[in-house]
Image 1 (cartoon, helix red, strand yellow):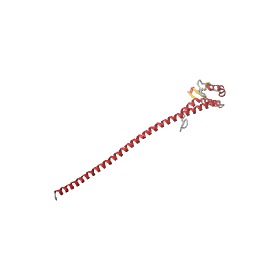
Image 2: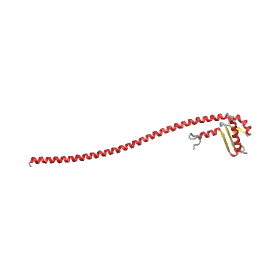
Image 3: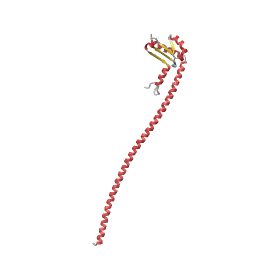
Image 4: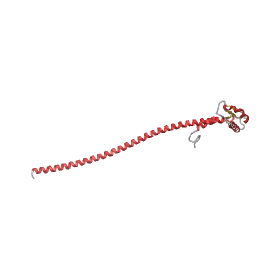
Length: 195
């Protein structure tokens, strides 16, 4: 083999070896890039999942916040409407009480309540009071019940009040007392008492 042939052969072998080494380096580099790409994809997906979870949690908080605010507004409006209806209802009840006081049944009602108070007191001294609005009924009630009845200094929408001083007892059959008690207890979920 001549020197030129040897050089040509050496050149070919060296080039082939360099190409093989370059191909190996390129393959390693491709594998490293593929691994880096996969790792980057996995990291990106993991970051995306974390971000989605964070955004979802944030969206839930915002929705809950808006829902709470809306529930509060609805409850406030509902309570306001209930109060309006309660006022309207009790204004109507008051009107009905006033209308009842102008019926023929009202004096009989008062007479019955006075007799109940007298029966309850038995032999004890009892003070019976009429509301000033009912002072016109006083003579007739005294005659029919034979009780000592006084017109109260303060009005109580009708009915009677009685005291038994010896036993420290107040009998309150006044419309105002009952009206106020029912007004305070009244709820729209079943009237005065919801069971």
